Length: 345
Ligand SMILES: C[S@@+](CC[C@H](N)C(=O)[O-])C[C@H]1O[C@@H](n2cnc3c(N)ncnc32)[C@H](O)[C@@H]1O
Image (cartoon, rainbow, N blue to C red; front, side):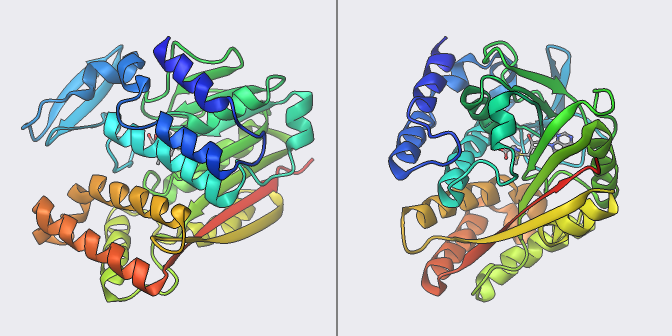
């Protein structure tokens, strides 16, 4: 109940489509590292305190398999390419990232679905993670029904609003819903989870489960080319690109979303690009940097496969900190791409 009460508290000052700074601050406070979500998410809690010094160790919780490496918990599905951990620390980062993005973008979605949500539609959050977006939208639009799908059971299974459901699944294999189920599909930040083939398969599946005339919205940041970056950030960003390419993952998927949606058969595409301040000018810039650094620290093990000296956490952290200083000095921006489209009616 602590978890639900904390979430209710977080939702209480929310505007339906946009947010404001005080709301963001209250949510950030509510989602600090000691919040109730850690104590009450039964899926995560059993496995979250992973074996601290193991290299690889398989475990299972409620039938879901996990893998442990160097004290971090990862998904245990060999067919899922996702490189980030799925433990409490990463879930907290993803929660905070949601509030930061909502504040920076001033919205939770860009597709023209507000009237539909008000009336009551069926929505899929593809790769929902710990489901901050799904929960907030479920609470905001009680006439609509929200389904979250994720390859890891990081979503809350037991305590949730009545109009929110979750299912475990790999979106690049089969999405376990019949054809033409959803009126609106939302997918955000899957860039570290899908290979080139996975993107093709996932978009094919999303096309299948979307109703004719329904909307899909996909958003990603360009993680390779930041505005105004200098040599330090360039090394970090291009190492990220090399890491992705070494896994057959697209390194500039944000810039390809529209083409990929068209290739999958969607029509009426509308692409918006928003530059987000990284570690400069205001609170939003600082908060985005906090998230950026946290994400980069969590992805260190695979970055160190490209730059071996980054096996040393302290060396790596010093490098990432230098990137933060460069971002502040150069007024670096991350370009956020959001594209929505329709399945032909
Ligand atoms: C960075 S989180 C983003 C979560 C959420 N979309 C958000 O924006 O807050 C990426 C999520 O995608 C999930 N994911 C990665 N590959 C997947 C796949 N093939 N099928 C389903 N989920 C996947 C991961 O488990 C993780 O929870």
